[in-house]
Length: 168
Image (cartoon, rainbow, N blue to C red; front, side, top):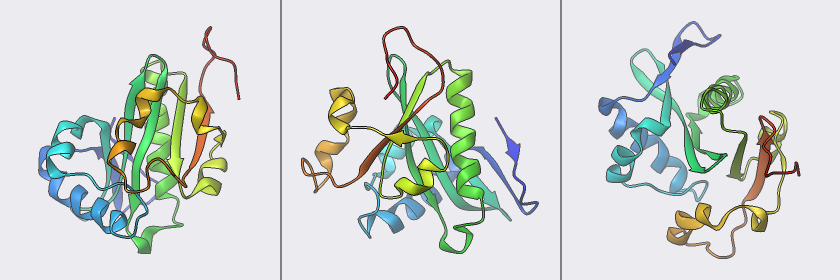
């Protein structure tokens, strides 16, 4: 799944064990501003296979993860990019890489809970009522200080038809 981005200085690749501390640092930068949920280093090790990274000059500068939730549903999580690279198209490439993986795994729907709804709408996601998502997805939300009054937007992208699901 290793790909080179349009930015010749860096590349998107699967996360490795040695990336965990850098992933944690980047994640916590945004978590400290209440822009995403914090994750412990232990949780990152547990979910390392979910993560891809954008690496530039040997340094982790962006992250994103695809977390499988249920039968035909996955979540894009933990999209974070150092501020100087925001707006460069690398965030889009990270998300598209996760969507490509979802297609390869035959996952038909991918959702996101986000404060950056317009960014995801530009990538083909549409608004979704959080109450219509399976209760299983709320396990991480229980640890959030904003639960149950979440102010994030839920969006979903349909990647394929599924016999038990009708589009939003």
